[in-house]
Image 1: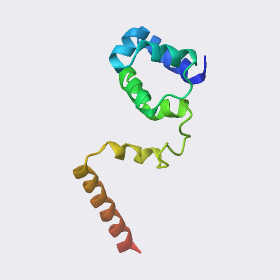
Image 2: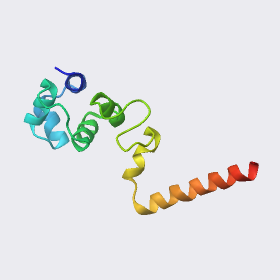
Image 3: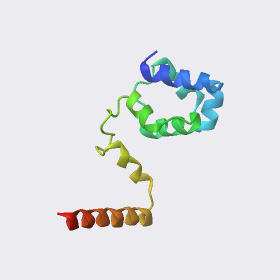
Length: 112
């Protein structure tokens, strides 16, 4: 069992879920979960990991690190982990974030 498989298996057992129950909650096949836990499936997609993180209510970034996609400083997009979630915002929310960044930069420029 690889590190990722062991981690998923431990989290699943901690939540008292069978492979089939986790698969149902994550909307994945039980075969996929089984292959992940056994180490037969080495590099699942981030979408699969996202589904598993939601189903197990565990940290997605931690699961991505465990799968070898990220280190402690960056995620797969190259952004700091703090900013990784920006991809899940809609257009209006991204505009709000952009406006806030502009505000912070103008505030910094006033002090220099």
